[in-house]
Image 1 (spheres, rainbow, N blue to C red):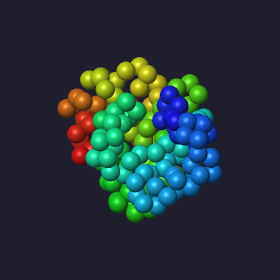
Image 2 (cartoon, helix red, strand yellow; image 1 turned 90 degrees about the vertical axis):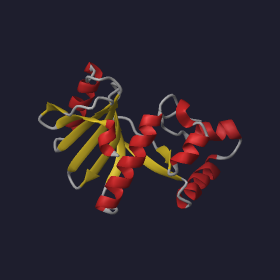
Image 3 (spheres, rainbow, N blue to C red; image 1 turned 120 degrees about the horizontal axis):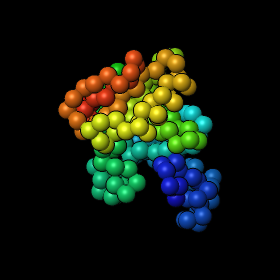
Length: 170
């Protein structure tokens, strides 16, 4: 039902379940209305909707670790609740992805300001992470990026990019 990334393809879900595409769309809208899932659209070169469970306990129970890491679920729950309630519906949340593979899973836009959060599993930033940050900041000139890592140290990566501990968003 999902492609190798997190985008949900209604046509694939229809084929896998035998449910029509319009009915899949209505079911997704109903699940959103019941606050079971939340839809996010992409920005960048690639788009498509991704969904997160609102209740991370349900996500854990359903065993979504094969699709979304526990760190990414944690980051979603912490970032969304913080940003959503701080800006009260004036904020737009999406993800950023390019054809070249740059991917920032959490992008918050308020006005012309963009804040990106990327997960970085290693203690130091990988070359790929640095390239992703650069790509994002070229696309969104007024942007800041935070690379969330397991390190306990805070460090400045560039003028508008920081590496911070994942625990800092809790």
